[in-house]
Each structure stands twice: as structure tokens, then as C-alpha cells.
Length: 312
Image (cartoon, rainbow, N blue to C red; front, top):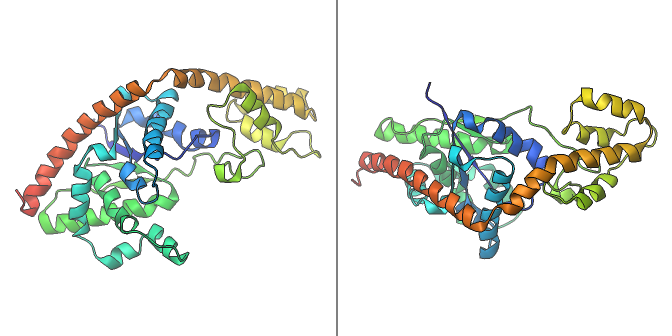
């Protein structure tokens, strides 16, 4: 059977932590080989808020390095930067001409910014059509997103329907995939792990950094089993493997934290070493090969679109 096409965007959002890994990155890596997988770095999307050229360049390289270190095989997916494929912005303009201003005004990101009294730039306003172009260019079947991103896929589906109604069946209607089972990883304070809460364990941390973070995990002195420690430990070992450890160390929080440090470090060390060995030159080569493949697909699709709308 022909594999379905899966497309996801990899935001250059800073240093990853284990919550990012177990919550989003690992679930993708566990299944991406089952699809024609396309991983796009949406650097043009980032311009709606980023005004630091060096940070944008570094972020794009970093996110590719992180995914490869965690197990991504660039030969089994198309990995590219949005800005390397000009068809994205060309199709975005065409799609903008298919929708109304009130339609775009209902986009959550735009409405939220306006509601907060902040100035929304035109890029943010038309953001949904650039994302729709990202998706529709590749005849995407599935777009994995969080619940907060569902509307973007719905917008892509709606504009595809509008275009097809006007010009014939050109675009495939994509479907969002929202995995309710994706782990919500607790931070060192027991709340959801988040950089904004300063409660993270960095994904590629040194052993010393791991030890410092684990020792800061908040524990409940009234119980035999420290719930926050156990919740994180379950990410690395099964409950059956952990049962004898926690049974024999009831109330011994330091011993259990020491065991967690060992297990996290053993898990991270190979990825940490692999990441350190990945050069910028290698990443540039990955992105260039990916851009060539993406351009071939996007160019063929845009020729169909151009003929349909009458500019060819």
C-alpha cells in the first residue's frame, strides 16, 4: 500500500527538555518511518515575532541537530527550511486571494493578540494561509498538531475546498492528528514541565546538570514514594522494573533520586555524545538535500496550480 504523507513543522524554540522529548519528539520518531514524512523548519513563520537574524540561523541548525541526535534518519524523511522553497510564499499569496478578511480575523492567534491590546502585524494576520500552503503543497494526508493548532489544519482544509470549488480538484484535504495519549511530563515542581516555569530537566544535560535538576524535584515528606520522582522515573523504566527499587527504598528519597539520576544519564548519554559529533556542515548538507527533494515536489504541484488559475 502507498504510504500516506505526514508533514510537521519543527519550530526553532530553544533548548529542548525531557518534556519536549517524551511529549512530542519521541512519539514522532517512533512512527515517522511508517509515512512519507516531511519535516519543515518554518523560518518564514518565525518572522512574525523574531527580529534576530543570528538567532534564527542558529535555531534552524539546532533543531535539526537535536532531531538527528535523538534518532531521526535524514534519509528516511525530507528535512528542509521553508525559505529554501519559494513555492510556499507563492501559493500563500494565491490562497490569500481565496479567503475573506473576516475569515482570517477569526484565527485564534490573531484574535488573542488583538484581545491583549497588542499590535498584530500583517504576517500574523495571513499566517494561516502560509501554513495552509505548507500543507497543501505536498498533498499532505496527516498533520500532527496540538489542540491549540487544530484550527490551522481546519483553515487549510477550508481553503482547499474553496480552491477546488473554483478550479477543480487540485488539493487534497488534510486531516489533523491530535494524540490524546501523548505524555504530559511533570517538571521538578510537579507542574507541567515548561521553560517558562523554570522546572525542566534539559534533554542533553551533562550528568552534573541532571543531578542538580533531579535533586531539586519537590517531594512529599509524608509518603513512602515520592510521587514527582516516580512520575519522571516511569518515563525511563517500566513500572515492573521500578517496583522492587521503590519497595526496597521506601522513604529513602535520596536513594531514589540517585537511581533516577543514573537512569536519566544512561538514557541521555548516547544522544548527548551523538549530538556533540554532528557538525554544522553535515546539517547544511541535510538541509540542502532536503530542499532539493522538497523543491521537486513543490514545483510540480505549483505547475498544476498555475495552469488551473490561468497564469500558465
